[in-house]
Image 1: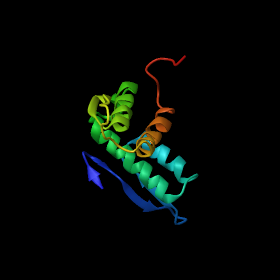
Image 2: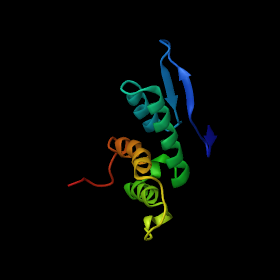
Image 3: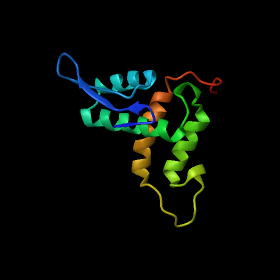
Image 4: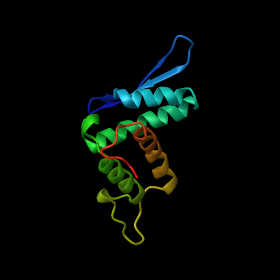
Length: 118
């Protein structure tokens, strides 16, 4: 699965365990962390979700800011770019939007912040 320079790459470690990478160092560390705590399909889903995020945001990982993450999550929850809801409008199922946003929120927790949170 390759696009925009990001690939979800699956391989096996020397013990036969699944190793998943997307080519973004911080995301790869996060996926390694997940690999020790989650089932393989969960790790693959998180890797794909991270790849989609970086494709949609269309910024190098070092330039992604909290506002980019929030805009992406809002758009996923509402089904519209910019996150504006329309009455009776359709969008992704809330559970799917939560699944998409969870890896970003968790990975972002270990990223340097623009300013201290209060």
